[in-house]
Every structure is written in structure tokens, then in C-alpha cells.
Length: 129
Image (cartoon, rainbow, N blue to C red; front, side, top):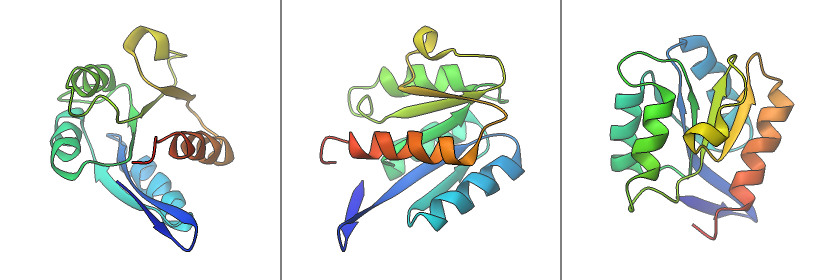
């Protein structure tokens, strides 16, 4: 869901990582940009939130307990009701986007301005959601 306020898009963005400090850091970045961050700490929790809360965008780590980022992408993209939700994966492992079907990829450690640009690119391409 994207809400427009005075010309700016406000989006619900789900941040998923088992490293709490990364979730906190990205959530602060999103809040600074006027968005509403949602927080999850593993893929299964994230999938439940995607189904329930319908975020505009998901940013997820690849390596997580319970359900990893690759499985999360497959679950989201495999569900016709969720498949249009953009997913940005993050990892220090290198670019896995093509292999797992993510919409974008950010290599860890990441630059916050790069993350901001990647997020904005997907919010601008949200098809009016």
C-alpha cells in the first residue's frame, strides 16, 4: 500500500533481517524518508506479515533462520495475490537476484544512499499501488 501525502508517496516497507541492528538502521532510514517501516526477524515471520499487512515493498536478508530470504522470495512470487510485491534481497554473498527471482539486490555491507535509491526506484515503479 502506498499513500500519497502532499505529493510524496508514503509506503509501508517490510525490513527483514535476523540482525536487529540492521532492521533498526533501515527502519530509521525509512522513517526519515517518511515511510512506515514494518519489522521481521526471519522469513516465516515476514511472510505472515506480507500476507496480513500487504507492504508496498520488502527488503530482506538472504541468510536468516527459520526461513531464509530465497525461500521468502519464492513464497511471495509464487502466490498470485502477493507476486507483484517487489522484494529487494541483501547479502554479503554476492548477487543472487537472478537465481532466486528477487526484484533487486543490495550487497552487504551497504551504502545507505544506495539503499535509498534502490527503494525509491521500486516505489516509483509500483504501478499505482
